[in-house]
Amino acid sequence: MPEEKEGADREAADTAIRRVAWISLAVNAGLVLVKLVLAGITGSLALEADAVHSFLDVLASVALLAGIWLSSRRSREFPYGLYKVENIVSVAIALLVFLTAWEIAVEALTGEGIALPFGGWVLVAVAALVSVPYLLGTWEVRVGTAYHSPSLIADGRQHRVDVLSTSVVFFALLARYVGIPIDHLAAVIIAVFIAYAGWGILKDSMRTLLDASIDHGTRDAIRSAILAEPMVIGIKDLTGRNSGRYIFVEAGVVMKQTDLAEAALVSERIQARIREQVQNVERVVIHAEAGERSHLRYAVPLSDLEGAISPHFGEAPYFALLDFGVKEGRLERKEVIANPVRDLEKQKGLRAAELLLRQKPDVVVSRQPLAGKSPEYVFESARIMVRITDAERLADLIGEIEGEVREERAAGG
Image 1: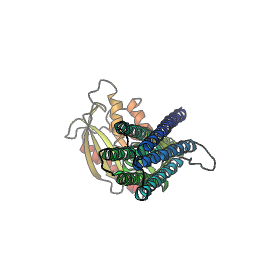
Image 2: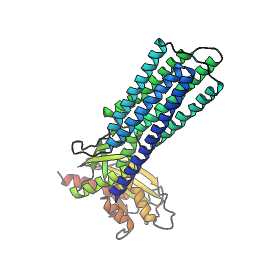
Image 3: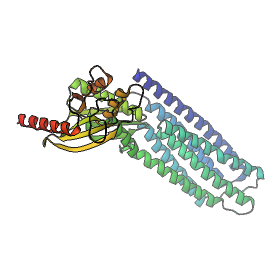
Image 4: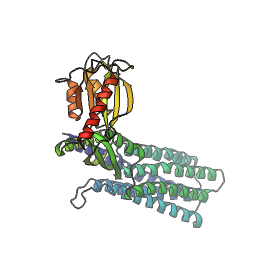
């Protein structure tokens, strides 16, 4: 079922991205026709350059559609998928942007152009064109961000740059309308804007193609998802990389002593939690190994801050967390945390157990038998031992535990 849902979500994302790409293609084709007509009417070099820019956007949209189609293909020769095709498409878009900037600059510096008289309605038409690439580009970036599509984001950013270039065209025409010839200067300014946008697209795409690490926010989210597993003691290493709009994760995880079957189940839980908290995760590889604890953590319900052990587990207002050094056999750290679920009408024992899971204890001490109750099942699944004690004071319990740890150490050699 999770695999079917994931496949359906991916198909929905591909469909949405393709729909936006087709709309982008149609809009760009329309902009080319309109700008060419207006350039013919006015003889404006800047407007002609902007039309060439829009034509290259048409080619970029075609490349975008091809990249999206190729990135969804499966092949035995490419077991990690063809997702980076999208990033290659983004690089192609960036190169088209650079080509556009170069052609515009060359034409502006060497071309003569023929200025033709035009009416005020041309200014109105060009002003109306300014909003089109902005709305289209903003929509593309939003959809691309939602579905983590680098090529769609790149295409959207390119369209938003068109706002600047078309605005420069408008002001150049307005200046010429009142007798100030700045058409060639406007074309050079357009070339600079376009080249700057191309550099941003190229830089982001090359980072992914060169397997740059995922961003810090995503990495922290993955780390938190792994450490939320009660069986995990620590993380040895964590790497992640982007491939197209998908993320590949690999982690070396240190777990409590367990068998291979249970370690596999724990790994599956970690993978599911990562996918819940991080979007577009294609693959998670967990390398699990059993670790030896240098400390043993005990969790003890308290009736007060003076150290009275509570006879009721779920109703205890506090829990003491005691860390004992395995080698030294003595208490090295003590912390008392509040129990925020003590006043619940139902399931207070279960919620208290879930609260303690986040503290990763090795042993939970209780004066109240937990056999057959929900806390016992929670602790059992996380390989946390439940110890029943007759001690009424925390100091007495600490003395007992320190003695036991020393005896175990002596017995072990």
